[in-house]
Image (cartoon, rainbow, N blue to C red; front, side, top):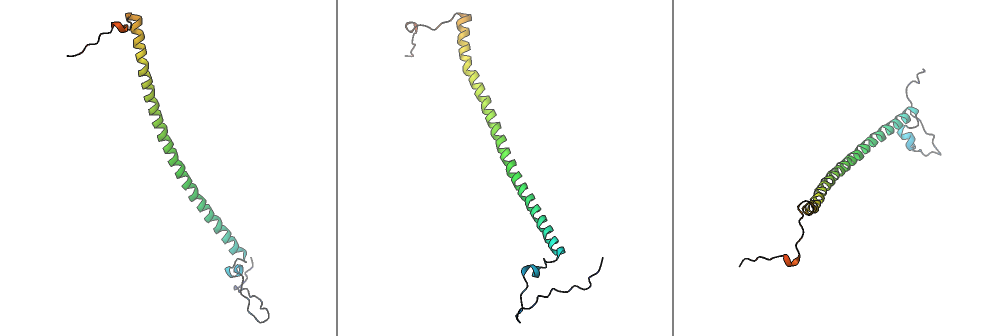
Length: 120
């Protein structure tokens, strides 16, 4: 590799006696490949870091939503169990009446056979 010696600043030619201001690329030193590569690498690192932050943020919100849906599923499962118990309770009356008719030969009395008792 060949050594270039001391670094010299790039001089910008003058136009008609008036000093010309350097462009932003020349001022920042981006006209050199090493500096340009460093800037591109820095940009990639910053964008990768921001994407990690964004992904973490989205994962936290998704996890919170998952927990809420699990709580809702547990609540609905509990309610379903209560409804099944209630349904079986309502079905018991019909079974009791049917067993009373079949096994004990019981039947509903006629309206004329019903006696109202009062406490006087």
